[in-house]
Length: 228
Image (cartoon, rainbow, N blue to C red; front, top):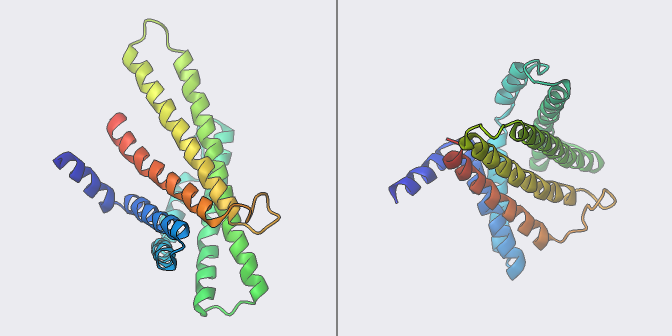
């Protein structure tokens, strides 16, 4: 019991961990509100989503440092991996100020025209979807590398190494599934005419996001316990 409590406290004490918990609470409230037709629960979900946005307002400097330290990805094993890493950093770096501009416009601090505000919202969602898609490609490449490493193991190699690679492959597969859910969620928030934008109902979107959030927390504990 003490170990479980310690794990939960450790999750909540980190920025990324607390964001995962707030995300789960956000979409669980929205899902319940959509199923029951209960506006207060949907409002609670929106408020929690706003709390996550508040925390992201201060991510610029850490993101700039990460992008600077990553550079052109010279430490990556291939040029494609480096290119994907650079693209991911550029997309994430642009997303943060765009999201802030949308927030400032909602507050009335920025006086943007309705057309410009709509374009910024679309751009923000598109950048989110692109970032997820790049992460999915990186995950698939990682899975392929794990497969190659596994195939290179000889029969004399320790079974522990093979078991470790199998576990990493399983976790990467679950991560890929989560990213597919997140991409489905992100694209569904785009305007009608953009792939499946606005074609998935609010209840289904909330269910997709809730499932993704549960998987995200499960992956956190799985990595912590299985990849020691």
